[in-house]
Length: 156
Image (cartoon, rainbow, N blue to C red; front, side):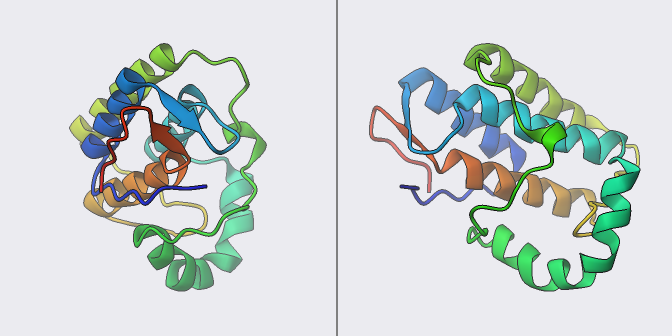
């Protein structure tokens, strides 16, 4: 069961991850906090360094439909469950929460301080830096909504 979670930007995503780590959490999905931090970090890194060419080629024909229908749902917190993740973004089991959280936080700092061009998303295309910030935060909210704080506090 998922909880409602809205994150407006990547700073809020890092804060939510820290709160989950500090309070402890119960997972109602398949991934731990460390796995989620790893997955989200890898997608942000691809946004900064470039996505694999095969993803861009496969995503291009679907881009107008995905951008019009799927992207607004994701940003609004109504992402579609069960969409398969490309193997390179599937985290391995046994990742340590603290280590992956630190790597995620460093990646977010790099993203926020970077002035370089961002690569278009394979399925959603070009976005401004602020739009990508919101996109990555919504992506993080989707995954983190499967984790419930043990202190019963919840970001909204």
